Length: 258
Ligand code: SG4
Ligand code: ZN
Image 1 (cartoon, rainbow, N blue to C red):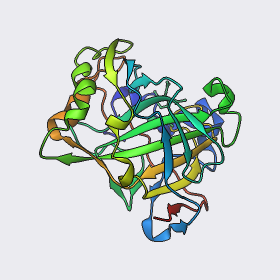
Image 2 (cartoon, rainbow, N blue to C red):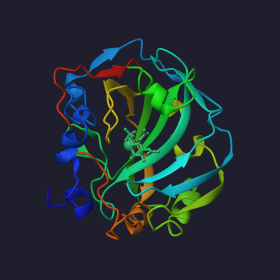
Image 3 (cartoon, rainbow, N blue to C red):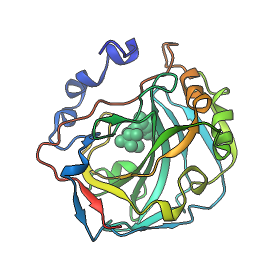
Image 4 (cartoon, protein in one colour):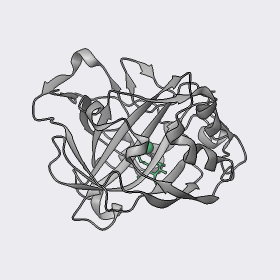
């Protein structure tokens, strides 16, 4: 575990089940997805993204673990084999060191440079704590990033904000963002993986329906590197903000029909 800074090493993922017994549970996230062991499920139809194009003014915060942006609850998802409508709560990212491996989930052992998590809760709930008491209360949409030769201009507002939030607990406003601007276009979101797991940080609650989209989001090397300029609470570079993959323990991973 020598790649972890002290922030992780002294209090890292391998110590979490002492902090919270859920973290030693049987249905933990992230996982490695072995594509030849996935089962196609025709019920995993395309998602309906409602109000994802809504432009909002958000606050981007360095919370000491990642950067997080609260999202107005007007954006919802349904379809996609989900048991209900879920509303967006926040998004955050997991990344590596200077553009190196950094995603939480891996596909056939491949770790991508970064992973976006858009966290949703069942629309009937008012807060995440309540949603986490329901085994299907939370749905996280996960998106991988890939290195590209040109900058992804749709990410300028986020990347440009990072220089103002290098310190833990600092924040700045994002004047105009939308969820659609962050993710691939809808027709490129029909291929995805589905399994049941947990939050990837303590309390590691096993209440998450996970979706990982196959198509990655392109970012240039400079854009990816910008995240490594952020700092943990102890002043060390905020790098390798991912939890290692967890055992499947017999869970089946499904693949969408299209
Ligand atoms: C990150 O630490 C976020 O900052 C947390 O969000 C998030 O917790 C946590 O990851 C776990 O989420 O999609 N990776 S994950 O399983 O969304 C929640 C905040 O602390 C509950 C706001
Ligand atoms: Zn996450």
